[in-house]
Every structure is written in C-alpha cells, then in structure tokens.
Amino acid sequence: MATTYDFPSDLLAGQEELHQVRAELTALLKRLPWSVEPLDGFSDDTGWRKIERPASPGWSEDEQAEVEKLRRRERELAVFVSTHRYWSEITGPDQVNARSELKHAHDTGLPDPPPGDA
Image 1 (tube, rainbow, N blue to C red):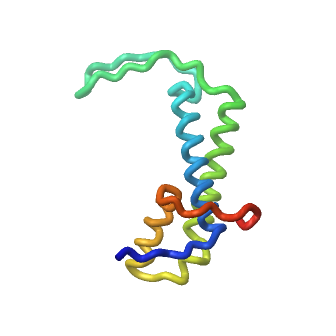
Image 2: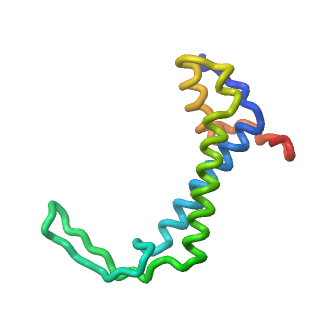
C-alpha cells in the first residue's frame, strides 16, 4: 500500500498555484511571437531538418512585463515549495516519493485547503 502524506495546507496551496502559474506562462508563450525583439523571417534547409520562421513583430512592453511577472512568481513559488519546512520532517526515499505525490496531489482529488488557511 502506498504511503499517504499529510501535506500542510499552505504547501498544497503553493504547489497548486505553481501549477496554475506554469500553465498561464506556457499558454502566454504559445500565443506570443517567436522572438522578443522584432526580427525578419528566415528559412534554413542546410541542417538535418528544415527550419522556417515567419517575421516576428516582437513583444510589446506589456507582454514582456507579463512574462516577467509570471516567471518571477514561478520562481517564488518553486522556492517556497522546495524549501518548505515540511521537507525536514521526511528523509531518504520517502522524501522523493512525497515530493512526487505533492506534484500530483491536485490530480488525486485531495481536498482543497480551507480559504485563508494558506
């Protein structure tokens, strides 16, 4: 039988927000042009596969600011989750298993933390 971990509500909330921020960042980056700076398009078929890119108008200042805001929040949450005091209570292979379970806790239907408990 698999070990069940009693994650603190703030750790669960931090991991869930980290998933959300990463999803938002991924969706935003997919919508934005391929280059931050305006660049001409190009085509290169000299390598092992052909690479083509259309001209890129670049990112606006607002788009750059939004990407930076999401990246900053992603870093803050990653540090919070990975250095949480809970991890000092678990050692060895259990810590690896617990970290893996935490990453998928939102998939397993664990209850959401109570509001204001994070």
